[in-house]
Amino acid sequence: MKDAYDLIVIGGGTSGNGVARMAAKAGWNVASIDSLPYGGTCALRGCDPKKMLVAVTEGVDWADRMKGNGLKMQPSVDWPDMIAFKRTFTDAMPPRIEAGMEKAGIDVLHGEARFTGADSIELNGEILRAKHFHIATGARPITLNIPGEAYLTTSTEFLELTERPDRIAFVGGGFIAMEFAHISRRAGASEVTVLEMAERPLGTFDDDLVEILVEGTEELGIDLRTKAKVLAIEKQGEEFIVTVDGVGGAETVTCDLVVHGTGRVPNIDGLNLEAAGVEYTRRGIQVNASMRTSNLAVFAAGDCVDSGPNLTPVSAFEGRVAGKNLLAGKDERQVKYPPIPSVVFTLPMVASVGLSEAAARKEGLKFDTHFEKTHDWYSSMRVGAQRTAYKVLVEQDTGKILGAHLIGPGAEEQINLFAMAMRAGQTANQIKAMIFAYPSYASDIGAMV
Ligand SMILES: Cc1cc2nc3c(=O)[nH]c(=O)nc-3n(C[C@H](O)[C@H](O)[C@H](O)COP(=O)(O)OP(=O)(O)OC[C@H]3O[C@@H](n4cnc5c(N)ncnc54)[C@H](O)[C@@H]3O)c2cc1C
Ligand SMILES: NC(=O)c1ccc[n+]([C@@H]2O[C@H](COP(=O)([O-])OP(=O)(O)OC[C@H]3O[C@@H](n4cnc5c(N)ncnc54)[C@H](O)[C@@H]3O)[C@@H](O)[C@H]2O)c1
Image 1 (cartoon, rainbow, N blue to C red):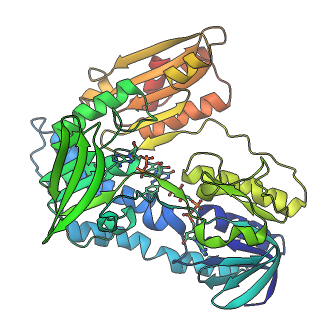
Image 2 (cartoon, rainbow, N blue to C red):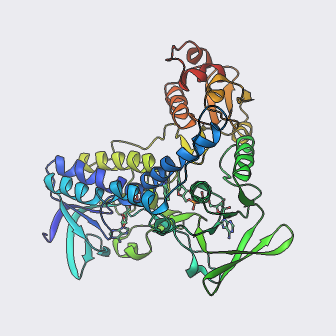
Image 3 (cartoon, helix red, strand yellow):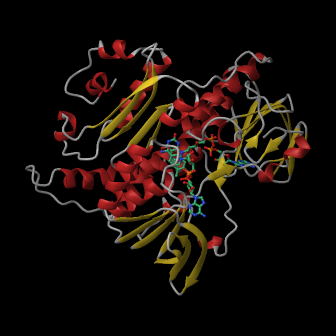
């Protein structure tokens, strides 16, 4: 460890590591710091491990869909084995990432960094200086300020559970609660409850498609309660009692585990940003379109900043812009987000890109809504999928795609095709004219526009 660098990157996740590598490749003297093992949320505590659990439970879903279609199999999930499977990926990542960074000439440091001045930080009691900083400290679970908050299990802790509790309650009905509730139920939990304070779960996704997902979620045996605001959590012996302000007044849910799923906020509280002259709000570190902060020598990107949705590809995208400008020494690149696809990895999956119907209407756009349930399409019938649908918004004058919303197998990949078509400004007719391999989920999209 040196005491002065060209660049210090705080945060060893998607946004941080990309910038550290770019600067090291350009010959800069770089240090990277993380208080946790290297890899960040996505690789170690988020997207990747979560989707490995989804992969296991897909077997259960597949067998359910194919019951009576010639497949005689009723698989069940062995939770400890599933977590061990997840670990084959997550345990290997930090040493692999650290070795790669060290090979690239980066000083890989561990500990919690805190600014002591405009060009200095404290790490493990020592002061380090740098000409530039890149802040990429991600997000943390929001503090709910309710009695018994300490009894909440975080998504990180959930992904480490060595035994599966039988009765699990999820506070919130967003991405984490819906995905983890589906995993838990298919893994055999007998009572899975989702407590969402809004009128419906997954508030940013299309109403009609979420309604279809809600039907599937209830059919799976998940107790999904809306207009249910969690007020308190109490521990009685080995059990937890969750108090909810529900439709019929005060309700309680008794369970073995209560999981936090009420949102994540920028992880910036401990950074002492005031000392660095870096301005921030509750939404995160304030950055301009070049990802530069109010201290011109400090950049920031990813979940810790006040722009863009908190998704891995967005953190990577913002990091690339920050890195380019950092190396150029001037604001050469601006963040101009392309259409950002997003997927809820429940089964069936729900996927979305572009404008919702409500947003398109609010903008005064003239468009046709193509909405259809597709359980009788070949691609749904082939895999026994009952809950499949699409809603695509096509602009009347231009034929361009304003938004695409999908539910069903294949949605996670179809949505990327829509994102690409939108980015390229392709029209409905151009998409119809494409030749896609058949039979495939891609080959359905021409019929959706
Ligand atoms: C359960 C879960 C599932 C998710 N699934 C998906 C998904 O399927 N698809 C998707 O696109 N997104 C998903 N996300 C969101 C995605 O993980 C994040 O948007 C992304 O990882 C953010 O990357 P980042 O680089 O901004 O921050 P992070 O990857 O969070 O990296 C920040 C790093 O900074 C470190 N740090 C913080 N403060 C300090 C400090 N003071 N000193 C030193 N180090 C510090 C932290 O330890 C952390 O490693 C999921 C998130 C969660 C929680
Ligand atoms: N597949 C993915 O891309 C993916 C998966 C997981 C997480 N993430 C990222 O992580 C973020 C955090 O996920 P999340 O699920 O925690 O948050 P979220 O923002 O998706 O959902 C939070 C939900 O909690 C509800 N809520 C808030 N307070 C409540 C209370 N007291 N009682 C009941 N309900 C309450 C809100 O109405 C909201 O619907 C996401 O916004 C996303 O950026 C992405």
